[in-house]
Image (cartoon, helix red, strand yellow):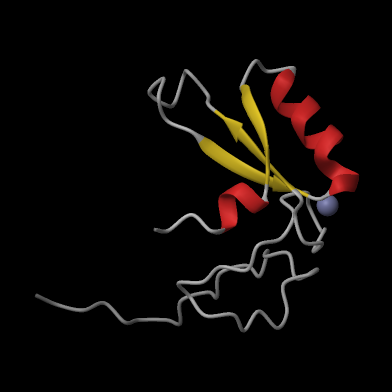
Length: 98
Ligand SMILES: [Zn+2]
C-alpha cells in the first residue's frame, strides 16, 4: 500500500449555510423542539404527522413541528403533495416516552 500524498489536497468548498446555525449547545439526545419552518426557532405548538408513500411504508409517520405562525404554511406544503396525515397538538408529542 502506498499513500499518495503528493500535493496538498484542495480544501472542500465551504458551502455550508451559516445563518442560524451558531451556538447549538443542547444535549444530543434531547433535541430542542423548535418549529420546522426554515429559520424559525419558536417553540412548536403543533405536530404535523405526514407520510410520503413513495418513500415510507404506510404506517410510518414523519413529524414536523410548527409554531402557530407556521402551522398553516407547513401543513399546506405537505397537503398539496398529499403527504399530510394528521395535525396534533405538540403537547401530545413532547411527553412521548413512557
Ligand atoms: Zn415557526
